[in-house]
Length: 265
Length: 334
Image 1 (cartoon, rainbow over the protein chains, first blue to last red):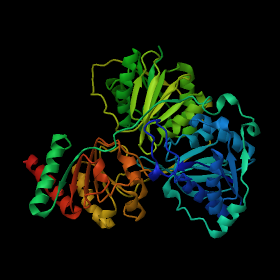
Image 2 (image 1 turned 60 degrees about the vertical axis):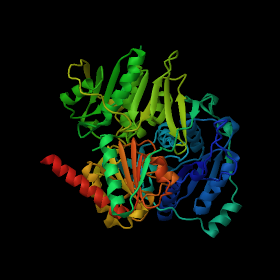
Image 3 (image 1 turned 90 degrees about the horizontal axis):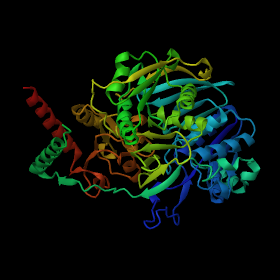
Image 4 (image 1 turned 120 degrees about the vertical axis):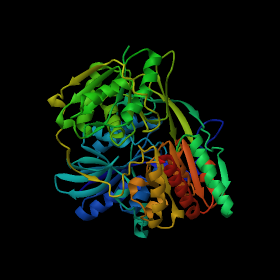
């Protein structure tokens, strides 16, 4: 079973700082990691390979430095890493990104499954996975929490929906976006790290992919960010201490009064 | 002037509440441009009364694509049908819900009809000179608010989180037109089959569409202690949530997880106990209307985001809240 896993390198969430003057992210000193939600896709891919054979190819669109994310995935057990990188890709929104990645996937030959994380923790849209499926005309299952059965031609998955799990059967090749429940990501092994260090990442640029230039980067993106604002994160709420019997009673009464004022009870 | 559309959702023939929430958002935009608001619904076995309710709650027109093969959401066919309607009617703006189906359908449609899409908008407005849809959304874990527009493509499309707006009041005098459309055979994609359905084993876990979510974290100490929160939630007809710590310890299943690797929610009231408030957790609850936190540690991060906080032992505080709410209910009953 040959599997392709598009991933994204993101700033580690707990470290994100913004430059209040320019409205951009301060990149210096911020550690970049594989999007945490992509780890579930990587683990799922490796498990399927271990069970059915084949290979796992991980790919990412990003700057040269994103090669590090691919090496981390190889250290976990992926076989190949493809970096889709070109200055012309800069500023791409989810539409242009899913176009570019789907064109790169077309170059990779045949495959049985594409697996992505549900969304990336920085952009937080969850649109690229479904977008790739639409570009490639593949059957799509989002929010996959369990792979129940795999045969030569088809796959049965459970997807997490609002009030339970929908069970889908679909032919291969197909695209799945997975949630945390699907797997428990492994750590890289020493052997894997060695292999990753020696591995030479393959790079694909705009010319290699013969892309329609009107569909890539900022120029090819239908959406434009026109303003960035900083929401007030803290709320100056009322904080009471529930210490001692009267303190406890008064605190709970104050809470009930708050709930009443806000018409919540 | 082309119209504003909202994508209504149904489950087993019943309209989901988010369908009405979208109409209140869409009504404002349509009024600002002086155009019509249309609700689009795909499904089967939806009653005339339900369709009429879309009119009573703000729609001028309803397009209902009615076919038993549309009973369950399957993205390929739904996307074909919606894309076909878009090509035919050329709407100005489409709003859909940021639900498991809306967040799957809309990015698929965006590729099919070549237009932009903005996920999880919290504010929507119309730019006056251009009539462009201004779509504001949180990004980077809620640390920034980005305003986005789609200047050169049509329609302009956005998804909106459930519970982030209130439905309009039922207005039974409102008039509108309901059009039933047949499913065109060539739009049916038979590749993906829905072969079953499994309900969540824990109680109803739909934390994204709940008015009230009561969540527990590491401070709950063990699964059995969630009984306290279940009782608290029952006073509000709320549902149970959990922090990542609590889910990783197996105290509640994953569908209940709130935060970056779980669900982002916007309930009217979020109550949490024994949750310290990691950045990842706070990112999932920032758009809640009211946040109440109970934690032993006065320096816990969660208090920075709380509208009301109690510093204390949750095993003393919650039973007392439960007792007082029960007494209050009894008094009201008398």
